[in-house]
Image (cartoon, rainbow over all chains, first blue to last red; front, side):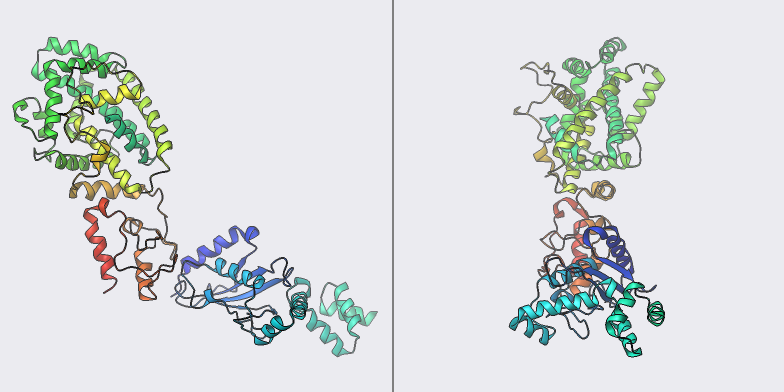
Length: 194
Length: 350
């Protein structure tokens, strides 16, 4: 059984110093076992400026078992699956300790963003790129951050794609979406009227 | 010497008790004075006791005057009797004098100083914890004396006594600040302070108070070299059981003392002890608070410790394997509860 008293306390603790740590943990629903963590991309990395959502599922044995974490935001990183968002981090597996908390675990994930371990990869393709062509890796990681991890860009690609499928030029669709603040229907109206 | 041990012991007492302690101290002083008066009444004529009373009324002059008075027989008897009790000397030759003391403290028996100390401190803490402002060692006796004093109606000296108690309390506060940092073992210190306190109270010893007050106030004690009434630190015949910081820790434990005093005090202590288990965030009870399963000092509650033993058996803090015998930092202090704790931690492995 999950120790909900502890989870509750951890949530309070997190919300208390949310400004200092930049780590946010929120419940997805009323169920304290399903949470969403939010971390910011470390400055000086290709992830800078991005906001990364992490799905957290607490196993029954929490805090004696590690929380299950995976990125909900797509991220280009040798130790994070570009497909599933699965994270390869020892403290989320065999090195978990009940003295760790959701906040410290998320901090570790944040640290992982700034210190990739390509020798122990989760995503082999990304790791290969990191080792063989670092510049390309940085470019791709930055592009993914811009595309998927910025609040303004969330979901924009899909909307642009829809409008393109309707027959509008991509550049026009993109600028229309931007001018109406991302609302798909308003952008369509604008495109139709303009 | 005596005041040293008292000062060293008091600072670790939690602040909550400051007020009670103060009340206790003034009660002690009062008791001390009343004891002296009582002894004089019992052993001497009313004339002499009246003279002593006038001296006792004097502002701030009490200890020295009592001491001088003590060179005469009644207080000498009183003092010698109490000191004598502690070294197990024959006390019955003064039987007529201390009948009040003994009859009011049923746990007292002339079986040796340390046992007396333990028993009486147990009584003492029960008294002070329950909120009573009378001092502990002779609860019954003391309250009796106070009643007596109330009947007499000469309370005009009390203001001076309370002023003196305030001054002592102020001194104690200073010392508390100084010594606050080094009490990494709060229970141990607490206990030692308890014993100091209790012994001073038990003594009700004019000599002790004499030294204490004079040293605290930087008034040179008016003790002449040939005076043997107040024990000096270098005195060859000085009873071993007089309050002494180094001696306190070696006092044998008595069940009554630990069963009541330490448990209750432990609940209000918690100076360096985390209040909640870092794993389950439940509040640590007294047993948990004194439970140190790992040498790194990381504390967990017994429940979480058990769970971790079932899993990988490593300390969540330092990841070292839990050793078979949990470190019992306060083993020497907790005495009676030690067996219980060991039994519990052993049963976890079976």
